[in-house]
Image (tube, rainbow, N blue to C red; front, side):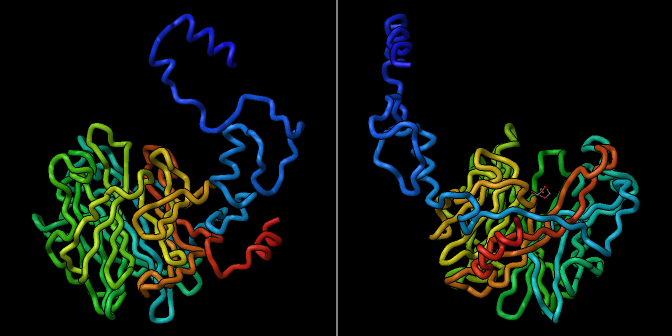
Length: 394
Ligand code: AAL
């Protein structure tokens, strides 16, 4: 390699080639102290390739599964919900966190029931949806065991035009605060796809998770100003309680010209109806599509799926702001709404999660495009004995 580099330098004489940074502390030299290389448990004092160097420095646990924020995921179809033969006229997607109240589990989600599957923005009408989440309402279901769900019907209906969300109300999440319940959701004022997936966040509140829900009627987290990272949309509001405040993580499509770049930010408030202050360091997570977070020890962990350079990772921020990759795994739950027992307790020792509800999209053909809710099970909990779990899994 060094001979090739010398040749290249001689031929090109080009300064930019000479300034190319050296590979970080990795060595192309044959190490003197030991060949073949027997992998020691602790980082050895010898030259190593870049991959071996970072295998010790970036990943302190020798195996991925020894890391507490690593998990595999198991999926089970929900019992008790029907999809009209999966013809695309009924869709359920983007579940909220799961909460436990009145002796049962609750989940809220985007529900679409339309005469046809989505037809795209140009073909959409007052009754024909543009996208899977167009012309939707927020519905809820309850369960005794998390596997069999009883659909209870609508929680948040579409309000009359021109109120926020008149075209579609979607992608909700729940907050419990001082004995009351708050559902935050995306409020569309036009069919998704006409001008991107443009919408702000609205909120409704109730004394019981069974409702009735009263719409606050005003936008609580507005889109950013022109030129700001979140100017096009505020999606996937995800409330937690930390430091006596409401922390809402959210996703924005970064830029209409490059809609595949998606990032996540944070807005905080002292009271559920706001005002919300966006964090000055936003965006805080550079990847992912939907938001899924849970208190973990003194910090917060995030399941980061689908989009961005750090997709399909599990990340952690001890200060709830500066996230680092903790685990890389596979088949992560998409749009996951975990059961987070300490989501609203302002815990300083978050216990983690073992299950929740997620979705899969495009489950049949594109022409029957709709989404389906699934239960996922995992081990992202401080309370599971990892050794026992491993025995069970192997
Ligand atoms: C998702 C979420 C939001 C988007 C769309 C529906 O899964 O990120 O809700 O608007 O896709």
